[in-house]
Image 1 (cartoon, rainbow, N blue to C red):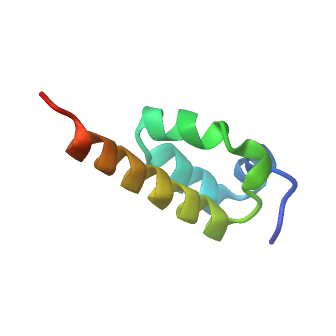
Image 2 (tube, rainbow, N blue to C red):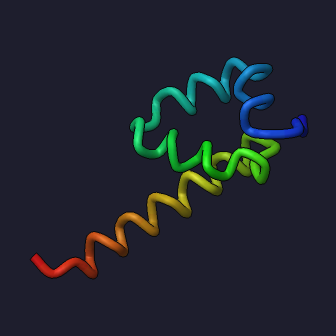
Length: 64
């Protein structure tokens, strides 16, 4: 089912809410920044994966 935003999706889908709450807080915050662009559980998982990939690449490119 398609919702108007991530907030609506989480509010109305218990399985999506459980998935969202299982993510690290930093990921949840990043996903909320994309609230208007996430309408389905599939889009949520896609955005979470993309953010995870981005974080991974940033860590790889860091010079310690």
